[in-house]
Image (cartoon, rainbow, N blue to C red; front, side):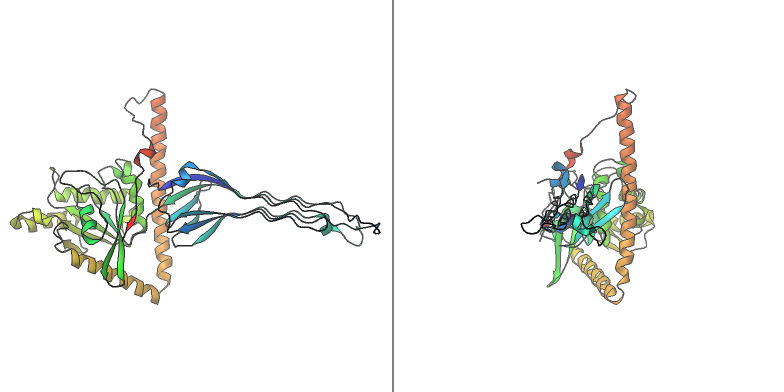
Length: 402
């Protein structure tokens, strides 16, 4: 199954049924009055969040959805049947955006959450509605109104408490393997993850959190290089980011330079996201000579001018990993306790998340505009170096592993 984190669809709610013009015609009732019934309301369209889905791939191939229309009214004061509502299931973590107005219509972050996206048309009135003492035989009816139609963009952001940030080969996949049951690919040669892996970290009975590993961020990711621009937005939902730095890099880039690249791309992508809680994790210290460890660690701290939490670990040997996961769990527990005392914290977090989403969409639309301009230039023969690509080439799989 492929992981598709964006899809554009069109929805159209059902049209309301027309009102009926009818008069009572029965034996022995020579002057029967009006008996035209109303039409039925058109069906509306809803989106429902479901934990049973983890991809928007169904909406990549079926892009048009229409709810059932209401039936017309009938004689004998019979009302037309209401059109059935159409309920579309999407993964938890889906944001719904109106393409035409750029308005965020819904943010489905809870299992079972249901939001109305398109209102069905209202029913027309039969001629019975217009009878009065001075209008005994009305011939007026009204037609049902058309259903609401929208062009929607669905964006899926994986839901995780903790997100891993870092360059390729920083040890993110090894870290998630060491703390959860997730088994992303790792090897002793340089490559980057193509799959957003999610694992459930259990620190004690009834205490756990979800951690997400996104593809490695390379220099220029915020400008569309590599896969970073496709997955950086998934970090918007995390409570805390772990910035993993490879302390024993395989290339000539120093750990300090690698750390600065990752932070720089994060700031370019979303300044608000860069300001969220972030912990520095210095990884692969088991591969660094003991006499060089402190100097290498200090070089990274000085380069970033770091003042936040710092952890020195070896994900492969699990050195320092247990203390890190316990501290994360305590942080998340403290957050839940604070929310119980002050529920407005959730509103503030939602506002921050919306700001990050807005900055991410702005960055993506800017890159798409540049891409379209380059494609047009290539078609005109002004940009021979332009290399077109297909988004489908980068569809990958994601799943929770407990």
